[in-house]
Length: 473
Image (cartoon, rainbow, N blue to C red; front, side):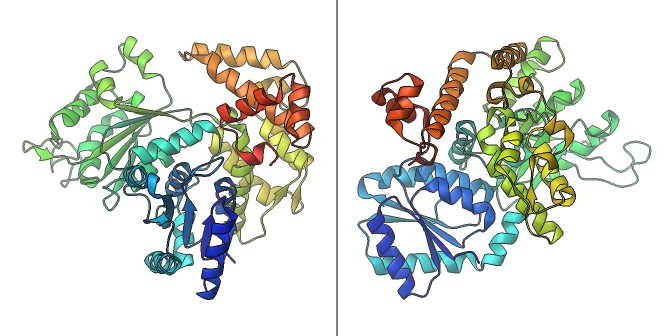
């Protein structure tokens, strides 16, 4: 059974005071020393309210709130802040946190606030249903934390956003999160994959048509812009939009109005547009396939979603979530992966990204013979993947420099720049985690085997933002 209230604070005394007060009030609760532990527990059961400190080692309250709100928008989060933090917290959390609890706080006031949050949320079943209806946006990797922070920063803005990333990285999930955290959340979120609509129907699909506008137009029809009025319109695969429609879209974004096909009366469009593409729009602009003025209009804020191979540390978290989700949908117990199976999974390149991992977990739930999934139970394409295909985090030997060379060549061909800093960061992160795992978390020994001094290792851990649970504490 999921506890009604979660307490997150690295200060044992604060946790103890709140635990005692909630016990007296008859409110079920669970405590966490680190926000990362709570994030890992969320997919397995959602509380009805959370009380979290703002300043903690590892993931702090700001990052934690953004991550929670991306997947559980209805879940009330009360932020505990020192007086010195309050102004920045209020500004940062506008529209996100349920309430603020300045330290030092009166314990009766704290309990009343928690009870109000529980009443606001209603019931845990409702919260679980809401969370289950939305696909996962999970991740501890730095690149995903950047995405969560961006969603938080954009919560009170209606600025146009361009989401880039490979197929299956979760671009529509991010667009949904941007909508749910905006002032438009109560209005519709309408999604349209422009690549999936035949070219001759796309104009009518977007803008609607008047009766008799063309053969077969037997009645007036509202388009997606009208359906999204007051809300958000998500245009996926925008790079495939025909040139003539790019012109019409630019006009809507510029003038704030449009005409139905065959219509003569302008219709006002109060719609936030979020666009996404797996293509490199800069290249399509150079090739004359995409209007440069539309590109600049869409590219106000850009969010890049990393492919799963760039955030392999998230594979276990995502796999557990998807296995639990599949088990719930099929009415069975969730399968568990052995360490060897999970390591093999984390070493796989996942060309289909998070979508492929979700499908694989569905397959395992149905096809794996036992409750515990062994390495041999994994699909052949995962078991037989060559180590060189797995890039920096390849498993089982092989010349990792070959994988690195292929990764660099692929990203250069894709037009990426500034590779050294990110690849160096990933290389050092991998070495530090492996060194600490080898020494059981003992930093002095890990520094020695890595060829660093202890102070250098400590500084690197801080610079790289490695969570405490990654460093063996």
